[in-house]
Image (cartoon, rainbow, N blue to C red; front, side, top):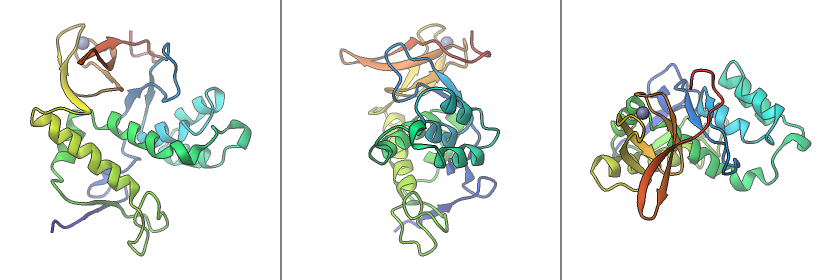
Length: 216
Ligand SMILES: [Zn+2]
């Protein structure tokens, strides 16, 4: 039996597993239409909490929060009129989507793979849904989703891709590394934001518009 890994504070060991970890990523909001615009999220907490708000000013306000803690506080205190309906039915899928985006980063992917087979638990003293809680009896959904991402990264690395593929940029031929099918990723070669889609049995990347001054 492999010893479990407990993580919580971003600054401490295994803090990169926390949603407060600061490796920004680009993504389309899960409710974006076919003409969606990619947005830069400072942390996965910004991504997750912003998705609680209906598209518009409040969502943008959460994305621009100066720290993940504020994104969390705003997301948890939305007026019903500003919140998306049925959040409890969709929140696991949105967290999973954000994590798949986050771990496209090659450094974070390597660190997650290095945790091997260890069960992962967010060691929150109060959260028995995402974390394990003080009594270590919680559902540990964040850890379970991280383990899912990890096993998909492992498959891609071993050459039997599923949700991740190792792709090159359609624009500049740079190696883009782990690309999540259904997600977007910034090419570090040409700086374009690329959407990763499966079409007719083939996984390809396509440019998508982006609302970020750094991206041309
Ligand atoms: Zn490129």
